[in-house]
Image (tube, rainbow, N blue to C red; front, side, top):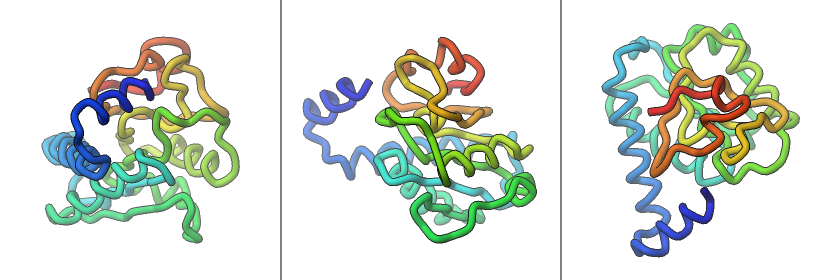
Amino acid sequence: MQKIDQLEIRSTGISSEAWIERAGRAFAAEILQDKTWDQQKKCWIFVGPGHNGDDGRALAALLGASGLKVHLWTLNSAEDIPSVATLSSAGLLVDALFGIGLSRPLTGRALEVVQNINGSCAPVTSLDIPSGLDADRGVSLGGAVQASTTLTVELAKPGFFIEQGRCSCCCK
């Protein structure tokens, strides 16, 4: 999947920034039209250090500009990891921690926040792939987000349909 992504970017000549903005707009449109979550409550967006995190940051700006209450939580910040109780009171949790490039098991803060997301009763939308799920093999890398919805770009990842992937994501 990474090779397909790289070929797509190279063949179109569109910059990474334009791809991120395009993905952010598509994700925002889906989330704004989704009436299954309480849009009067806060939307938490969890971002990591890579391109998936960039998509999450773009989404946060767009949702905030549309008038939603958004809290952007960054993995590498000093901000405390929100508790299960705090997350359970949210309208929506958006997982943009890690994308298809993740190749190592989740540990430390990343694993703890994934566990808290999974322990909450709030709906969860993952961007492109649930964080911690191997895109090709469908196995959990030490822990994976259990998404109620996964908004993916380009193609569904093979890992969505095998092993733990079948239970980790609902694709859109």
